[in-house]
Length: 363
Image (tube, rainbow, N blue to C red; front, side, top):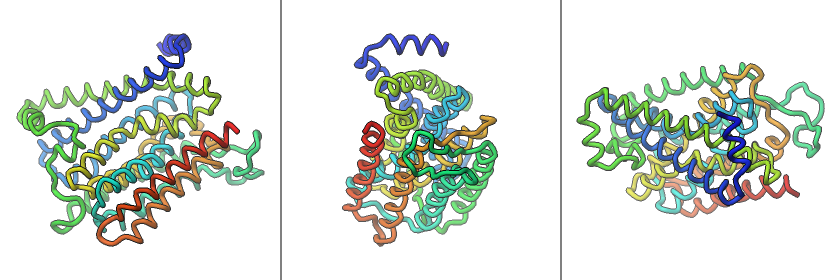
């Protein structure tokens, strides 16, 4: 199957290959929207508070495309694509998506999230770089040399992240249950928590459907996400080969943007409805999960872990840390709302990261 897909994409012109990648990304995003909507319905039927659903189920659902693409890539031995997608999604979520959300409307800053999960978000990014750093290896990974030493997210690091993921989800539920009324994410309608994936009419219909039907639709959504990921990986590799750009860079830009579409839909929908704090909470949660869930599981399923070549230390890791630092500074300089003009700062950092990703490697 994989060889047949590779042969098919190799036979396509550049135009049709681009169209096929865009269509597959759209299919992946639609599957993720569907998955989130059904997961929220299932959680609501179980009686969980909406604030807990937003902190756990929705964030897990919106990062499912990244997880599906990265884990499948790792299992197929395409390690740079797996790690590049996780790192690129953090850059995209915090720079592009949160920047757009700020420009639409100055979002409220729920301090329980930005002062607690926000530091976890930053700490997760720093921990990822620290574990990938080639400790004890001669040379400097920041040097632009073909033989520069490679770092690695080892398999034990993947298991560590998975363990931290369990702890993070447990803490999220505990914090949500103990939060005073009105603190943190508000008790939004479940269809808003689903990022606009379902209309109110569809929501009410699903809420009254038999539990077996809801579970069946959830499983179909998962199959759609996984199937679209299978189609996407060889297409991305072929595009990277034709552009003479490392697959890690393509994964950190084009693939990361495509797999982050659920977060983008959630942020825009929430901001337009005046629920910018929901957008911030979702981005923070998605960033944490991109490290603990996406990178963690991808490394855990491979005996040798995920290699981090020189391009990660020269471009991707600095860009990721830069956008996380810019967000932390924006929070500290803001009061009860994130300054709307700060959206331009986040977008500028994202644009510089994208320009650097291609120009420094192609030059």
